[in-house]
Image 1 (cartoon, rainbow, N blue to C red):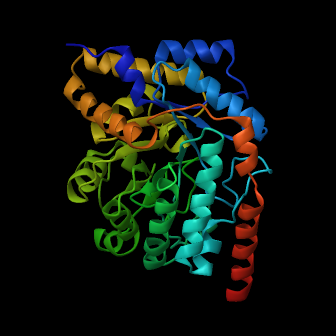
Image 2: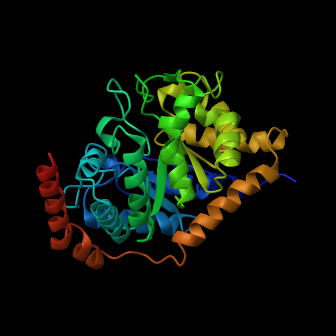
Amino acid sequence: MLMSRDKIGQLFMVGFDGTTVSADLAAFIKEYKPGGVILFSRNLESTEQIVDLTNELQRCSPHSPLLISIDQEGGRVSRLPKEFTIFPPCEVLGRCNSLELAYAAAATTAKELRAVGINMNMSPVLDVNSNPANPVIGDRAFGSEPAVVCELAVPTVGGLQDNGVVACGKHFPGHGDTTVDSHKELPLVAAPRERLEQIELPPFRHAVARGVATMMTAHVLYSALDDQRPATLSPAIIGSLLRKELQYDGVVLTDDLEMHAIIDHYGIEEATVQSILAGCDMPLICKDRNREAAAISSLDKAVADGTISTQRLEVSLARITRLKQRFLVPYKPVSVSDARLIVGCRTHRALLRSIHQTRERTA
């Protein structure tokens, strides 16, 4: 039996241009039925506008509640407008060396996100900043030692998830030892398995054991684990290492399949199919509407020709359904009046000052 578009669309998280739900976007959502959307700075102008946008996205979705996600790590990876409480990068929290502050920062971010209808944060970064030449991680990591990352990732996950926001650990199995940016080209990590076990993998094992709801893959080639495919497309890394060895049964998202590490080597259709075959649940495509449509159609075809079984997709759908039941149900629209009381409030600003003061004392 073939799987309906109604089900296949739920496996996808997509991005879009614009700050409103245009007629084109509404038509796309109704036709392709994605299970989630991701928001960027290009979509966000103000508290009021974000409330209107997220409410409208939920209204026009056949799969409400939608996962509505954002990369709000703090520091240079922050998408929210300035009226929100924008925390410093993870490295600063690492230097503060306070589990209480890490939890409070994540909890505060979660409260402000939920107030405007955003229910998922692509955080925490579980990468270890082990290579000073790394052009993409740097201060996004809690530190250069796996023990520091392990210690601070857990309260960050807790602060988000205790306040109703889905956390996402990234980038499995570790992006900290790369010398090129996967947004631009495909990085290679040639470290032996023993080193990966000592440096890269402990934060992911730690987060899995402590209930991180979702995980994001790295578009990185790890020659000791799979010398043919980047992690996102690797059954050895996602299916065997993450799913079987680490026993992770949460939702696994790909990093953006439009990044050059993937798109320069695979078509969007092939990358989508290979990511699902590898063990991922939710392909992420952040911008191009034509690629998003082609990717969803490619799963239709893969089921029709027997490349992917309906049973395989049902496993991913069940994970996504469990995630939504846990964090998004019951769904209710957000209001501008409530959001104004929470976003950038005095208590949240005081916490931000406290983190900066702690950082200065420990410098």
